[in-house]
Amino acid sequence: MGQIFFFKGDLPDHVTFQDSIAVDTETMGLNLHRDRLCLVQIGDGKGNCYLTQIQKDVEPENLKRVLSDPNLLKIFHFARFDVAAIKQYLGVTCAPVYCTKIAHKLVRPSASSHGLKALCQEFLGIALSKEQQVSDWGAPDLTEEQKGYAAGDVLYLHQLKEKLDVLLKREDRAALAQACFDFIPARAELDLLGFDNPDIFEH
Image 1 (cartoon, rainbow, N blue to C red):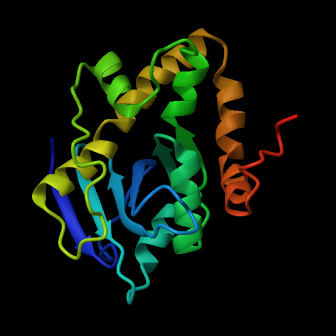
Image 2: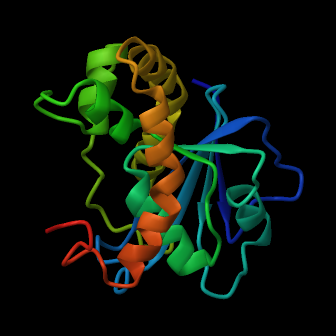
């Protein structure tokens, strides 16, 4: 593993990325309208993780520029939630995106779990700890354990994408997966507008 870099408020000007990044978020809960965005994690695919703690009095312009860069592929696990949270609290649309959860559901629909922990174990042989998942992400000072957990959520997404791309091609579902990925920003907008329940795609 490379390094974990932690910033309060925004990414520094000198931090840049190429081609693709892995992205995750930590919020105060799972209600997009109630639970504020606390942390945005970015993995560069080389083992380095960049954590940005969102501050109420700081506009994260550099972070927003990275997340909305049309030349950077953003790799998520369960992109629907993270893209919506970023839109809600940072006001930018993440695109283009790739979702490892959607990819896994397309190639392994009968799998017992599509969670990140299960995928890391299945494809990479890595036992990912989720112990800090429900810790207090709104705390002014995050613990080293929280930072390590947050980094773990983006550290392996590039590797998972490589494995899943092989299976998407094998099952002839790469084009369908891409169509799903392209729709995610719109799906996130629908969620923010309250069209998640009831879902307009239901009967």
